[in-house]
Length: 426
Ligand code: AMP
Ligand code: MG
Image (cartoon, rainbow, N blue to C red; front, side):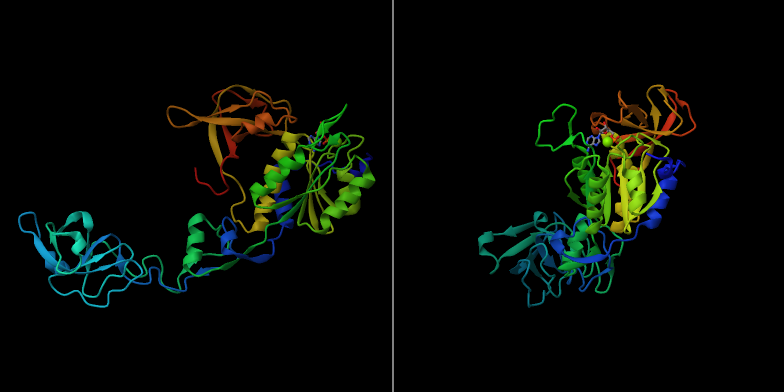
């Protein structure tokens, strides 16, 4: 490849990410059904249209009564009340509880007029056959409840007009319930980015095929599709293309048509058949193609017809790490998330780490807890960017900063927690 296609400057991961995020906009909003809303990011505030709960109600199965009647009740001085009825959730007691009366009440049923306290069934004794309820039955109370016990106030969760969820919030499991409680059959969220996945390499065959001489299966497209799904995007897999500039260029132009992002793997370096950088430059605008990281310095980013293109390396672990560091934050930004980065943990390095070169290393590694509660981090045995197994067993990427020659056993390192969501507190 001729020199004119090279941008020699090697950006830091932070610079590269900042350039990307600068060019990434929020996805357009869409209206979706409540049942599909889990984990999406709200593009509207959610305001309660009712009081929740809409009425004062019982927190227990028990008896609703007037506190004054049972004040001072004890084992030695129990109080007997007349049971005036049975009230289940969903029904309303039309009468008023008078002195000396109690209403058998179930959890969630509205507190009847006159009553101010519920005593739970376990703390009472119904006299005679319970089958005889309510006519003439009596209940014995031999302990004094707290005044107002087991009464849930109206509006305990929210009052009509309260803002319960805000634009930019991820809809949690409980959030889905709040949407339901407030009558939101549909909700405005940011659209999931449509991400085209493309792989290039003349050695690639489909997963269903047995590789012939010199061939390997295309694993990257599937790894990257999973990563897109995990980040909240919608992945579309295209058939892989040979290392032909024409075929690859045509596939790229096709991919940008109906997608918000294109993620491709392979052809990103400077081999004789690596066309990613050249094609992004020719068909659009190249932003960068080298990042100070290992694995995978050959990270290309640019725009074709205003669509962001991420050219990840072909080596599977390098592609996955590049996705994690550069693509995932972009997808999250489009989705409306405010937290774009996963947390980092400090951990004691278990063994000497010698760097092979000055670039910043992201070693596939796993954490363990030491006796004092602090973390220890152990890098995987093989750090080859060709291997997925080490990444599969990792819960973090151990960062060995640029400049350093390595880290000694016992030193403290920062670890990017790929096992935790963005915004998680440690
Ligand atoms: P490249 O970036 O095209 O130079 O590829 C680097 C290495 O990654 C080579 O060993 C490729 O065979 C391998 N590779 C490229 N694309 C894929 C893919 N889609 N799935 C698995 N391995 C790949
Ligand atoms: Mg290749």
